Length: 547
Image (cartoon, rainbow, N blue to C red; front, side):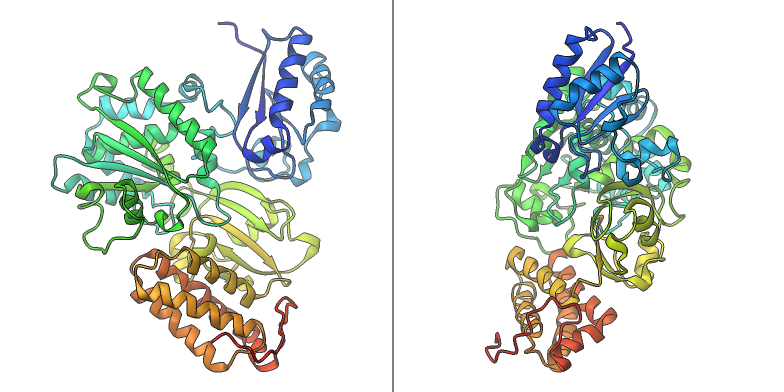
């Protein structure tokens, strides 16, 4: 096979497609043929690479030149200048001063920003996600081969424990320990489940992994299944992720054809089959027992715990459940070893974390950085600072279920232990950055409103507590609150955490706790002065309070 001199990649995430990526791709194909470059240029479409403002993107290797946003009418000039004449089409380049996410990683050779350390997103945006051959060329299925030919299940679990990999879904439970529980559980039939029901507002990291590198999850699940003694797995994916679902189904077919799924993989006694199960849009199904209920064809409601899924999971069998980002760390750890993984991040929280950056910053998008980076560094380096030079007021981590973090905690290392000591939570990985124009009462009201709609209603604390909290916050936002309301909100946050049946209700009280712990003066101004310091709340002063 002739080695081609250049590789051209076109972003085809949903936003890029909406902005005309498919037309750009078609035009590139036409122009490459027009200049008779088919034998020298490879053309592929790749997933989202973490850059919103310059979509659709065209990246040309080996120069790693990034163009964007590219329109169909720009393509002739781009092909003629760069691919035919060998000159950079400077006027089409994405502005390097605003680069972030994957682009920051690519553009580091110019010294514009510190490089990201990419582990789970190593291939996203680099390979064609519909090509198993490209995955294999980039070390794909090497880890699975190593596991099945050189390691015993106990060795795999020991390696994962030694690596210190913690669950990236928000709870931070060590994956190796969880694997050990499932492996030790009694039962001839066991299951492995990938939780890809990424319904947390503002979070799209798992979608990018699935769209950009679907085979990495298949390989990771096969390794996990071997470790715990499972021969069957499910990927429970958010129903709205249609592109990711299609790519997973295609990847599963390719893996079966290549012998990486099915019977006697790599000539071993290990067999593994994999299914994709689409969700129906219920936020509660991100909770692992509600997800299991949904796969079983039941209403998605959490189960009482104990027993836990590790002993009584899918169809009452021992089940390993991990989210997409957690699983994506497994093949690199197998290939490179625990010491390599622990060389990134902090001693207590090794590795990297994928974040989506949203809100009042100059550059939004997605990044993968080592554990222990601070919020100040994320905003300054990857967010390119606050919009219009505004001051940071707060950041919300992890979507609705995360914490509201005040500016005075922006130098706390972003790792599980440091955040727990500071009284806040990492959450799933969304970073909503807010300036002084954000009102904490209004923000809490929006979050509680989300929880009251998404509550499954199974337990009273969540069903009634969120409704009552929303009523109180609405009254406060309209200048009708009392100081007793603040005491009630404080109590509700405690009750929700201690008495709710699952994580949704337990974390629903976090916004209440955080605004009272960190922004009590602002909340009291709504009550005592009937004023909203941020100028957001209506403060009507009406006597028609919501009771």
